[in-house]
Image (cartoon, rainbow, N blue to C red; front, side, top):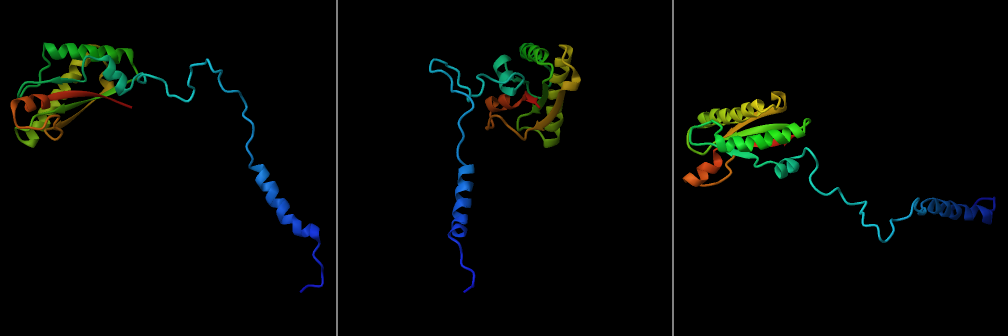
Length: 171
């Protein structure tokens, strides 16, 4: 034992420190009032509808995001031109948007042949969009050949769905 007596004030010091620490963490009153009961705005809710320039906005405002091709072909036919015109109109209205056109093929043919054909299809769509006033610098292309089928199956219906070029917005 020590020769110095401990004062009661010294014993209460840890309790005082603990109480001050806890009071510093107490909740503070809100700065503003909540909206009035008749106010229909939900300030915590995200804006409704797709964000301008997004893939969702693109899909909501174009005829389709894809065009289809005949076997071993890469030409943009009259039906595809209508779809491409709607895509070009959206791109003109969204000048900061960039896109990637993905070329696809059906399962028939070699991997190398289908990669080359998928690239020709994507480039055909890209070139058609450029004739409609879309800057080439806003468009990239990629070929997936037969590696990413949309429809599984070894029949004409499945093959027709897989011979396509798909437009995707990129950020």
